[in-house]
Image (tube, rainbow over all chains, first blue to last red; front, top):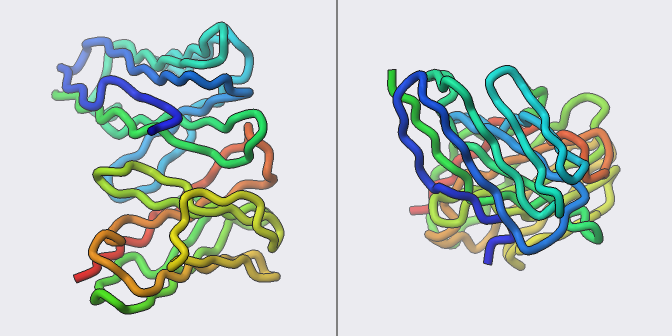
Length: 111
Length: 114
């Protein structure tokens, strides 16, 4: 079983629409990261959230860490074709240095 | 460009063979991670090294082994290859071993086992 469950698996929207991607777990994390991966490339870090309830904004992207530090969401406002990619959440348990990734959400933004 | 270099980019081989994937981390990074990415399994953690020592291990098969050398480059050895080993293998590096540090990924080595 996956440590991190991401939903939805696939998301296809029109340019200008908003979208939200979720990352859930039954485990508590000391921190959680979001990465984006484009075809033919490795994942690239978008943000790290550390504090329960924390909200971070990166231009049109808003990241939230759940109060209990078990879940997170990524919201994109007015999506653009350049936002197309595989969005991955990643986290480590408090007693483990291993960084595990969710299965990812494939986002396609149509022009 | 993440600064992490992986070679080869593509590799095609036959079942039963052995291959070695190479990774040069970003300058100054002491930690190296190996991940396997396939369509059905997603990005799976294999193993992590810090300054030459193994620090964490994932579900790495016994047919696979890795090491980090004194110059900090790392190699992942895959032996007795099976069809199911076909995947993208990523190397990532980070400055330290902490959980909040950013991982910088290479472009991956695509392995095809025929």
